[in-house]
Image (cartoon, rainbow, N blue to C red; front, side, top):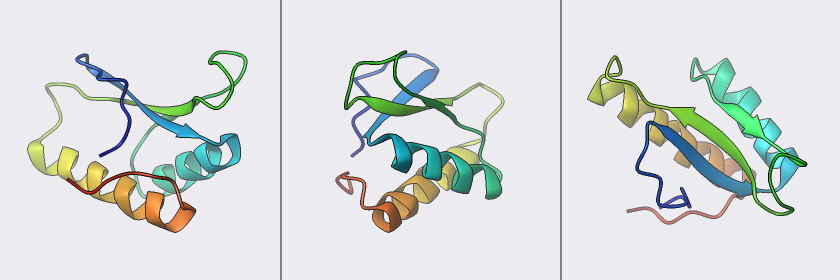
Length: 85
């Protein structure tokens, strides 16, 4: 339910929009053991701040599910829009 710009690659952008929320989501994700990278201005246009997650063949389905679940929980906590699918 996150805006991923319809990414079809192992590098998955997740649009957050708000820079401070993207930075906080990055910090909290890293504390939980999930490594993501914030992508901020001027690398992206205004209001399209995002986090970048990289998925590899080395990730298990359980690890991916854990990351998605964490991202959903953090989005609720930080009031970042997404739709539960």
